[in-house]
Length: 438
Ligand code: SF4
Image (cartoon, rainbow, N blue to C red; front, side, top):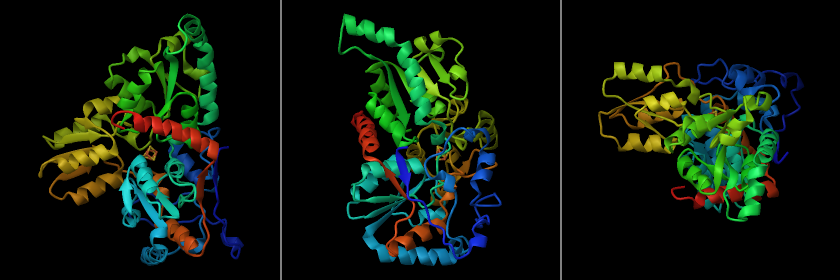
């Protein structure tokens, strides 16, 4: 285990109440509970979280919080957050991912995607504490990029990313060993014939949405990290050094990027880690492949479809459709534009008044864009909208709790990446920063 979380301590004065489910009303959620128990969340997420697949460290303590915070009204939470924030001053910086609800975003010193926020945090040297209102892998990245004395806090340790949880180090190393065996002849022939300077048989690329130990795996094995903004540049970097790419954990971002770069569909294979030998019929497929994709996905972005786009075009002639590249390839092809959350924000901001936008990304961001650009019509492609259920686990109650603990001199829900993992993860991140356009 390479990551550690300081888990919340639940007061013992009310033992009878500790087993009660915590229910926090939330206007924006269609769900009965804004803070579902992990077991319910797992059931809702279905096959995305199979039993044998461990979640990030700390997730087993889902949604634990002192009961008094869970029962506070929004008005009281607001007051207590503001008070604690004022008391802590510059000692704390609060980061809010674009997919966070407005009740959280309004307290954020910066909002952005995961990498932008981690970079912002790295400039805030005066802050002792970085409160990352996002998900676990983002807090890990902030810990890797911040100073050693700074402490990174994830208000609710259960806020993971279901896609990131679909790849773990044991499974990736197992595949790596298989590939190493398979490509050994290439390596030894090259070593004998030409020696150094020959392309590697395969280069690992991990999406930013992955655990720190997977980023470290890439750092140690000549690989690199990518974001949805720079996946193409990063893949070009990898092909300048290797014959093949292993891309994890998002199958869809990997496929969309590879196809955009002109890689033939038959040279792209999917390794299904849930099946024997990845569900690969013949190992020759792995030898002939240029890109091997991990079978992971984002349940939020998989909700969007070409049918929704066709319907939007019928209802709003002239509508522009922009989607995130975590959507499946058919949806990306049916859209007018695709790109990262930062890209989506930028194209909508720069578009003329009166334009109409159908957007395929997380609902909190789409609603915020609609509110901030009243001169444009902006709506979500999915009529049955649902927030990212993992991002949604950062409720203002958690923010109030961790801030008041800091005021009292206690740090709860800290996310720490051990030194060795952080060192190699940073190597992979720095390779990304050195690529053109990162
Ligand atoms: S939107 Fe998808 S990729 Fe992003 S945090 Fe949620 S589950 Fe993970």
